[in-house]
Every structure is written in C-alpha cells, then in structure tokens.
Length: 164
Image 1 (cartoon, rainbow, N blue to C red):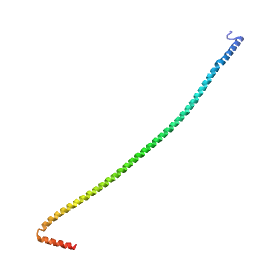
Image 2 (image 1 turned 60 degrees about the vertical axis):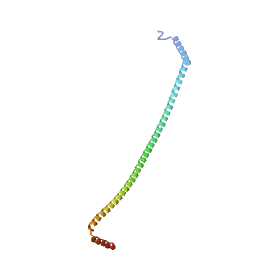
Image 3 (image 1 turned 120 degrees about the vertical axis):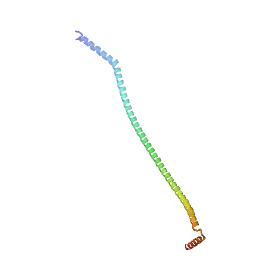
Image 4 (image 1 turned 90 degrees about the vertical axis):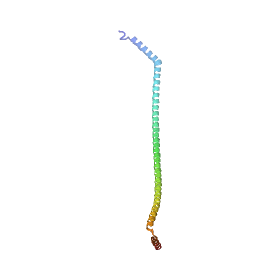
C-alpha cells in the first residue's frame, strides 16, 4: 500500500524533486520556450500587419485600376463620338457635294436641251421655209403660166406695197 498512500518522507522528496525540476525547467526550458512563443507571436503580429498593409495597398491599386479603367472608357467614348461626328461630317459633305454636282448636271442638261431645242426649231423653220418656197413656187408656176396673169399679180403686189 505504500505506493497508493505515500509516506511523509516520500511525499517530501517528491515535492522537493518536483520543485528542483521546475526550477531547472524554468531556467533552461521555459525561457527559451516563452521566448520562442513571444517571437512566434511577434512574427504572427508582423505578418498580420503586413497582410493588412498589403490589403490596403491592394484596395488602393484596385481603386487606381478602376480610375484608370473609367478614364480609358471615357477616352474611348470620346474617340467614338469624335469618329461618329467625323463620319457624319464626311457623309454630309458627300451629300452636299452630290447635290451640287447633281444640280450642275441638271443645269447642264437643261442648257443642252435648250440648245438642242433652239437648234431643232431653227432647223425646222428653215425646212418649213424651204418647203413653203418650193410649194409657192410650184403654185405660182401653175397659176402664172400666162403673161397676162403675171402682170395682174405684179400690179396687185405693187398696190399692196404702197398701202403698207
């Protein structure tokens, strides 16, 4: 039963040895263990601070990236608007030029038609005059076969001339 219920001497020596072991552990083991735990705690705290700084820098970088993207989008939109304006200006200029060219062509065609019409009318007048002279000549030849008729016609024309 000695092991289950220890004697006072055994109990004293057990406590004494335990205290010596505690002192030895405190001097040689606990200080390095506590120091390494403190170093570990400091390194973890530094790592957390570094992570916090990195997170802040990442958020700043993200904000900068968003700002740059917004500026790029704005610049793209301005370039697209400018391109649309230039395209519309070119289209308007081409339409205006086409209208002017069309008007010039219409005026040239009208002038050509007028000239052709005048030429055709002149030619037609000449043809009518030639035909009229030919017809009058044939009629007069038939009506004025006798010299008596020619004299009467001449006298009539002379009277008409004086009256007018």
